[in-house]
Length: 235
Ligand SMILES: O=C(O)CCC(=O)C(=O)O
Ligand SMILES: [Fe+2]
Image (cartoon, rainbow, N blue to C red; front, side, top):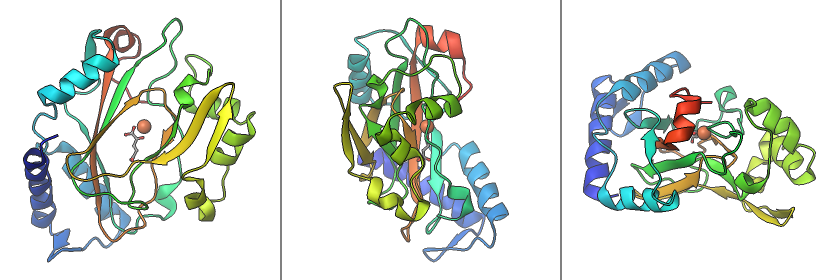
C-alpha cells in the first residue's frame, strides 16, 4: 500500500493517543490495563483509516480467488494494536482460523494484514502456520475443536502446547504432514507492507516484546457464498 496513505493513517491514530494523553513526548502513559483497553476501543471506533483498498491490492486479492465475488466482513478494517512490552496475562496465545471450515468449499476467502508502522521480530506481529489451510479439519466447529483435532499430530501438539517462556523458539520451525509443508512464520513488515493469507491458515496474536507499539490493520475478504453462510461475526 502507498506509504503516504498508511503514514497519514498512523498520524491520525497517534493524534488520538496524544489527545487522550496516553502518548506524550514519544512515551506511553497508560497506568493500567483498563486505560489501555479504553484507548484500544477509542482507536477502533476512530475514522483514522479511511478506505484501506488500493487498485493494486484489489487486483491481487481478486487473482487469489480467481475473480470470484467477494464481500468484506466488516465495513471498516479492524485495528490490531498492542502496547510496547505487552506480554502479560492478556497475551495468552489463541491459535485459530478466522472463518469456520465450510462443507463443500475449498476456500472461504482472504485475510489482509497491513502494517501502519514498522513491526520487527518480537514486535507483536501475528504468527501463522503456513500450509496449515491444506490440512483437513472438521467443518463448522469452533476453534477449540480444531485445536484438539490438530493435537493428534505431534507437530501441532508442540505448537499448541508450547511453554510460554519458550514461545520464541517456535518461529521458524518446519514440518511435513500428509505431503503438506508447514512452517511457523512471524508476520513482520514496514509501513505499507501487506500480507494476504488464506482465511483457513492457523494463526495467533503474539506478544509484543519491543519498546514500540504494534499498529496493524486487518480486513477479511470472504467469497460471497462464504459470507452468506457465516455473516459478519468473527470467530
Ligand atoms: O492481533 C493479532 O496480531 C492477530 C489478530 C487476529 O488473529 C486477526 O486479526 O485475525
Ligand atoms: Fe485471526
